Amino acid sequence: EPEVTQTPSHQVTQMGQEVILRCVPISNHLYFYWYRQILGQKVEFLVSFYNNEISEKSEIFDDQFSVERPDGSNFTLKIRSTKLEDSAMYFCASRLGLAYNEQFFGPGTRLTVL
Amino acid sequence: AQKVTQAQTEISVVEKEDVTLDCVYETRDTTYYLFWYKQPPSGELVFLIRRNSFDEQNEISGRYSWNFQKSTSSFNFTITASQVVDSAVYFCALSEPPNAGGTSYGKLTFGQGTILTVHP
Image (cartoon, rainbow over all chains, first blue to last red; front, top):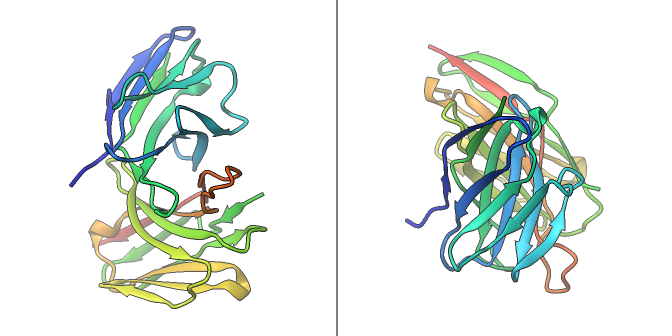
C-alpha cells in the first residue's frame, strides 16, 4: 500500500541553524500539507501546497518557514533560523484530489532545537 | 473559524470496560468532514474514521463505534471492551472540503486530544 514517507525521523540542531525536513507524498496525490505538534499538545496546521504554490498558511507559518517541491516526488519544509520553540514533531500529509477527503499522514520528523 | 473541543484531557479505564471519548466542534460551513485519529506512543497518526456532515448515520467497526449528532455538534467515539493496545492519544479533527473555487484546501483542525490509558 502506498504511504507517505518522511526523513529524517529525528533531527537535532542548534538554535539559529537552518533545517530541511523532507517528505515524499504518495505519488499521484495533488495536495500536500505540513502540520506541527509541540510535545503534549494538539496537531496544528502549518501550510497547504497545491499546483506548485502555497494555497493556505497559518499564522505559525511566518517568514522563517518555506516549502518547496523541488522535483516530482519530494516536498520539503525549510526553517531558516531555528528557535527553541520550533522543537516539535512535524507531520507531512498528502491528499489525492478534491473529491477525496482523507489526508494520509507520514510518520513524522521529531525536531529538537538545542 | 473552525474549532474542535475535546474536553476530556485524560481517561483511565480497566481492560474490558467501555469508554467514550467526546468531541464537540464549531464551524460555519454547511458541508464539512469529521475525523478521528489515533496516536500511539510511537507517535504516528493513524486514521480511524471520516464522517461527512450530511451523513448522520452512526457507524460501527469492530469494537469501535461513532455517534454523530449534528444537532449538538458532537462526534463521539466509543471503544467497547477496551484493550491495553487501545492506550493512545485520540484526536478529533474537522475539515471543510477543498473546493474548485480555490477558497479551501481542506486543512484539518484538530482538538487537543484525549489521552486514553487502559490498565490490564
